[in-house]
Image 1 (cartoon, helix red, strand yellow):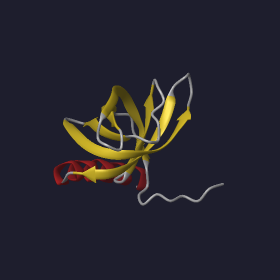
Image 2 (cartoon, helix red, strand yellow; image 1 turned 45 degrees about the vertical axis):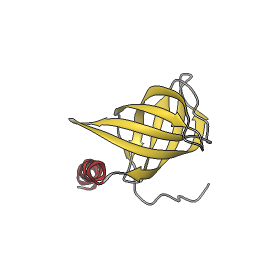
Image 3 (spheres, helix red, strand yellow; image 1 turned 90 degrees about the vertical axis):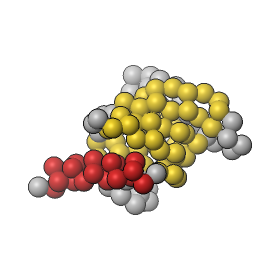
Length: 116
């Protein structure tokens, strides 16, 4: 079994999101919708109908409670999941301060819930 390289603990969470795939030059290739399967302060795993290649960076907008959080992340892996869906691991590379504050609050609530 591989070593866990994650900086933060991930929590199961189902949140709708939209994304735009960008190549190394910043050119938009496609966009789509999906949902988070788990999330942390430094990354997430998302589920989509189509595979997202590891060469892309994603601009992601996640609906967290009543907020919309915009995050830029790199695709670390994509695997075929259940029911012809794809699971993609994302490492955050750019999170604005206000979005990070919302994300930290959200993850903190999970931490309280699961560690009490």
